[in-house]
Figure 1: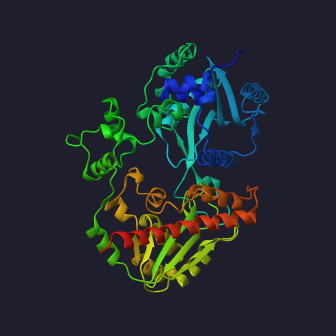
Figure 2 (figure 1 turned 120 degrees about the vertical axis):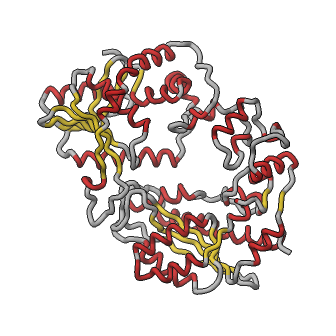
Figure 3 (figure 1 turned 60 degrees about the vertical axis):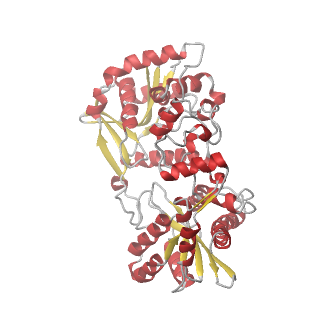
Length: 496
């Protein structure tokens, strides 16, 4: 058996974009580095896949010693089938230039059945394409599948004591959908093979396919002609409209006709500010916002984890669970105090109880509580009210005092070119207070903080625990200090 040109993953890359397929197979060195966030998603998928095996216990594993030696799994799978094994993990098959591994293959009284595991909470169209190429490869290898199912996370499941895998997962047959896709597969394979036999990269321009259904691995290469700040950074402009501008030859914001365009008022303000280099300030609106705040001012920020497999009783898959907060308290005379909470990294010790007790005590009963992007903190507080109903009244009191510092920037009452269309705190802070920066922190974003604390909880973290706890505290503290400085800037520069 010769080496397959395609795997199920490269087949899917070809469906998304033939250029991506070609680059992956012929110019792999041009691939974008894998971000820590993306790697965390991959790791999570692996964890979910292993847990799903518990749905069908007692199986044998056909995994190869190395991901680059899938052919080893083809031989293992055949040996397992020939020896009468009825539950096989990572069963792998090769046919017509395609090699594909399946998460779980079982045989019961009805016959052979295939199960592909996804860490998502629903079935997406790309999952059906994935299942279709697997089915094609398996049945043409001599295994007569009587069913094909996708196993995915049930987000309605609530953990109580031990994980119940039968409730954690939903098993959905996609057999009919997979059968319906079989007629297109041989021609697609032939076409992708012909693409790979060519000596040059396919001439395909950037387009919506670059991020649909996934971000392409080669955006850094394919998008190198797009400047760092372009029409693709226009705030809340649809992907369709961005590419309409691009296809008209409009790439930079200064190419946009300021008199004849389909931009809304905020988008046009962004473009005008970039072209003129001027900062826009609506002093009346900002003054009204600032004067509505009541001292003492509490600047509050939460950090959460949201694991696919819930850790704590009473939590569900992908539910955000608070584990840390930072609180700066600003008095009217300018005095500034700080307090914080960081949970113990212990899977047996739910962080939410102590979090709530300390938060309620430190937020007092009066004064505005300022957050950045109110939907997040408010949503977490509402979940905590459900989880700890005897503190509902105090938590509702905190919710009632929340004010969103993002509003002046979201509504573009204050906008400068340095913000580049964004109103995230990571863009607003350097525009207003450039001397305050996240760049020197070892942990400098929320995703990183969440990933590291999760690793601490499950015991996979290998770094210096004490130092990293200090790094987590430093990051969250800077988030609320940034809010203080942004508020001070607004208050001193634009209020009257």
